[in-house]
Length: 379
Image 1: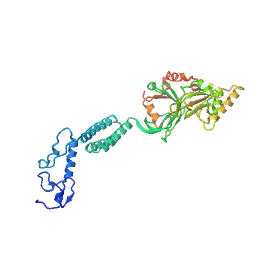
Image 2: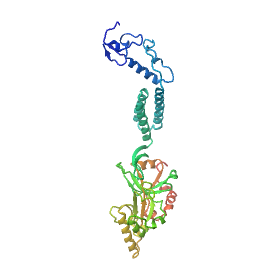
Image 3: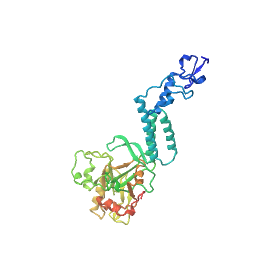
Image 4: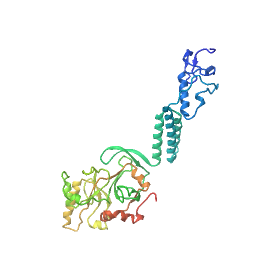
């Protein structure tokens, strides 16, 4: 040996005084002469991983002196071929996702492209998996979709894909949501929903409403059922009507896990007005102060019974009580997303008379026959 120690590996640059720890795989001299056997093997594996379908001379021949390495590269196993194929397919999927979701600020896409470059040049399948997940989530977000944790109709926690969108001006409690034709194959087909809760502060409450157009068969509610709450008998006496309010909170043949009530009984603690009375309209002449949501059901039924007894002694109209089994619920900004893609239109100027006097099975047709009243964001 002409050189004297210490000796360094030209790949990892670790130095040693014992030349026996290194090998000289080619005819290079000086600082390029020595390598660790494991470092050369790792470098050859990396080169082969990038080109599993053809011979890459860099794994067999020194790129400096152009002599064949004395240490031959390992054979390409099925695991290495599979890893390379997965990286190629994963890279193509990432590029497709980025192209599909190319909207909004360019910075997330540029960052993902850098990660794509780094991921395909490395051997880490974990990095590639994270890159795929990031690309998928970025694409979903650009397209107005996101993954959330939420409770299903039976109260179980699970993942759900929702559409979210920008705020919609004029959307508030008391408006009527009108289903578009694209919902004809869903539970919301030809439905009209009274929105009774809408939170724009992104606190997690989202929006809630009940379907006015899905009455339940009257005979299902006439007979007393074992274990029913006490207010049910009073509800039958005041002629309360029952509706399917929505898919959230329904529990098969058992009592609904979530219920709502709309009524015209003023003064019930905890209730709030959704549609005020038009003082010159027929509803006001019948004694209705407006359409209210909420309040204790027992108190609503009790006060409705009192109003019914007064009706026999005066010209005041009977209270209208509608009990909804199940509700419609949306996460923060989910309803806005559905409105922005045209799934729902909305009516902001509904009258108390229209809500109370239109037969439920005719309400959707009546609103859609006056298209100028319905607001659509994409038409």
